[in-house]
Amino acid sequence: MPRTIIEDVIVPEIFVPYVINRTAEISALRESGIITANPMLNQLVNGGGRTINMPFWLDLAGEEQILSDNRPLDTNKITTGQDVAVINYRGNAWASNQLSGALAGSDPMTAIGNLVAKWWDRREQRQLIAMLNGVFDSVSMKALVGGDADEPINADMVLDAKQLLGDAAGQLTAIAMHSATYTNLQKQNLIVYIPNSRGEVTIPTYLTYKVIVDDGMPVKGTGEDRSYTTYLFAQGVIARGEGTPVGSFTPVEMDRDILAGDDVLVHNRAYVLHPMGIKWKGNPADPEDSSPSNSDFEKGVNWERVVELKQIGIVKLEHKVA
Image (cartoon, rainbow, N blue to C red; front, side):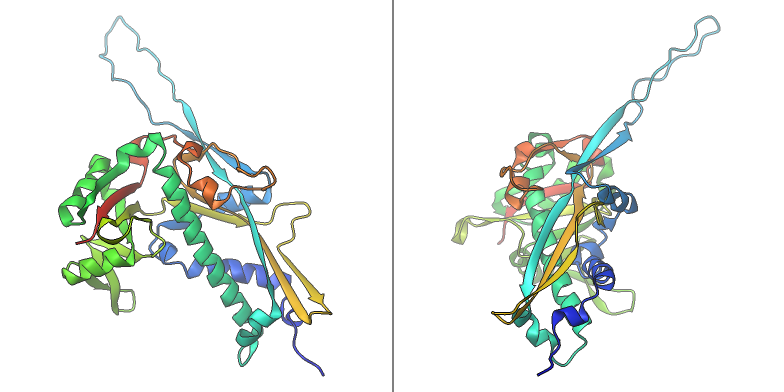
């Protein structure tokens, strides 16, 4: 009896760009402007390897000189630094019985693409939170940790945290928090909703910062001892790139298990998700891994800030809820 199988509806040349685009569209973090696509990273990912080196010019330093008619100016030089990002090699496989419900009554390509894209989006957000945990566990980032893990969040606490960036605090545009924090601020009538581009009042803000709600935000302790982590972000502070490395890397593969009656879809990805200005200097704990795991990303010893504090557009805030 004829039936539709995954191999009938998945065309790799169409599926891969579609899923990449869908994954880039549906993230609340990306919609807020925190994560931005970086075309240069797309090209560098295609080159393969484990990491990407990103050299940059450091700001000019030193004092001005007093002019004299018999003393020449001393020359100064500009120096460079280097940021390092990880290329993530990750994949997963799905059998057709897990997707059969989505295939019924709708376009199979759209259904499968949406399910896979949404799944990858959730995984990227979990990865980003793991990276932030490690970044702010780094000694070089301690100066950008504010708040008080024993006190409820309030406006003064958030303003004190943004002040850690001094006169560069104006670059902060969004605040990411746990739903418990968000609900607490709602109870205090501190969340203000503003119209989106269509004139619909749907965008929540707090102290003019666009609010992002994600229960993946770190929570420590239980009961009354529970403390939360909230982050303040600048626009485009997380860079993202995706590509297909040259060689034997295959983004999409399909197979059929005749005995089990399963159609299998395998989706492999190579992408970069990187907090700019904080270089990766570690290695995967498991030598057999092609790239770091989320557990590796959560270790502070694997990260190091390579730009001035004011150039880091992320601030961590620790607090309780009232």
